[in-house]
Length: 314
Image (cartoon, rainbow, N blue to C red; front, side, top):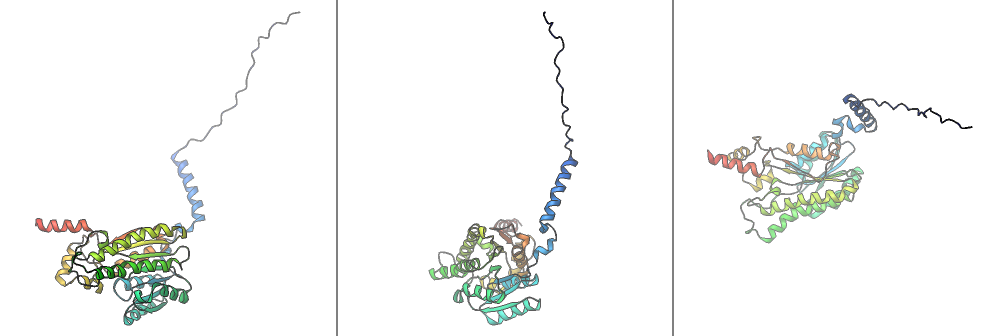
């Protein structure tokens, strides 16, 4: 008996394909909002921005804080809650700044003496002994030993060396003293100068030292990053202080000339520099290191050249 071949074809059952929701802008936005909401729950630092600038329970050393920019920095840090170590050569200046800090409700101790003689280590130890911590170190000591009237090649070796010692070596030693005592999250701020960012006639040793400070700032930022210690610099433009007066003979007419070279049309104040330091000292700048903030009203080497050319054209 012969079986006839089956004429029926074998059939396969097709499974339904999954239907994906269309990817729309709304879908992406909803996903983003969900991710952000999780981030907000995990990281409350995204809110309360003003609180990031507060420095309660922080202790700061400001070298050369007896007057001028250093005093402005110390007072500004105290105004946002930091305890201060005030250091300068003249006892009268130190006491005045310390009292200004206390009048704001912050604590202050006084360390009188030339930092080149008493040493940064002793200042760091005084901070730890008084406050139990050292969180902020501002290398503000600096200046020039003579009037602005000598070319670099006419500068005696001892003057050149003394300028490096005052403006660069003290900052190097201060950074070491600070880094060896700071907890994670501390910060070092170097007060440099616009002169350190370009050639500066008749202030060659000072400019060279401040340029070295800027390079050192970047190097320290890289080397201390693993300890989460941030290192930044602030470079002031023309601020008429006693130290600036020692470098440049400034009368009323000269002050107007300098102000005219500044795009924002005025000379700086210690408070202008101090607010930049407060920012760099606070959690508001927790992801900033190795940077230099030029606080100069827009005045740079190029703008000075432009102003000179403009006055010549007129």
